[in-house]
Image: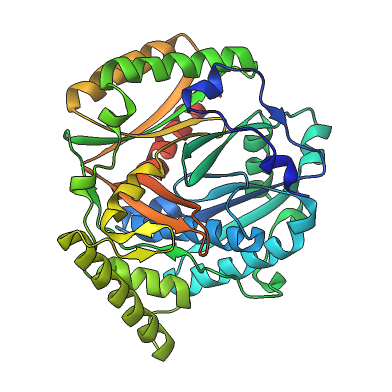
Length: 390
């Protein structure tokens, strides 16, 4: 059952994940699910970065609706999501992902690739897989993943090591449920001038060396950028409701198309909800919707923002100045020259937020990425560096 993850005690802070004891080994009867958008870099260069992020958000809510809650292990990476699955949910989730592949193709003309790899197969070749979690907010507990198994599983899926690992559209048994997915906010401008999307890959497999490397990076970011509240990419005063384009994307994502009566009915409902929220925020009216007080909706976005994570690489979206970024690059270049890490970085002037929440509960997560490509473009830079090292 999935109680293995539920019963893990979460850390009180992200940094404590790297100060404490060894994370917990993933049971060998679990599975790794990897999804990503094929050709995401090209799509982003065409200005479709929001479509790419939306596709990732859809996989997360589809899986959440199979679980029936959001207390399960997953990490969002910009153009895809990595999940860990217990055996009892393998087949319904496989069906949901198969339908999500079809819906993403229909709604956004994007090709989604997905593969499910047995953890025992990764253990059989000597790769490790561990996890821990921390409580990001009252409404969101975040997973962190460690070990060599994830990049290996990704390689197997992308290279087609075993055709049985791949999820195909025709495996759909029941439709994917995207209830709880929302995407109603404009891109959020930087408070201090730049939004940095950063990916740092420790180059040592030894867990203790890895922890020290990540801790050094986190400590430097704190000393240069300040506390989390100083470099958080979301500020309440900068968050604004969208007035059209992104609302259509949400309706398209939910319906799988951008035409027809059902699409326009969904769009009309989204518009009505957006107008109610805008009214509550503007006039400070505490209208309740579930656990939300709608006049404080922006505060919830900040509290449950998924702007830093670890899945074998440290991924962060950071708000700072050009000087902050140049100093950070000098520091990372030095650590890179020492062979401790390799990194990729991408700079924008704003961030974007994709919201995923579980209807009928208070659980929610707001995926944050840098605009214009963010993590996808930082990953491209990182991969180019790693090629030169090999």
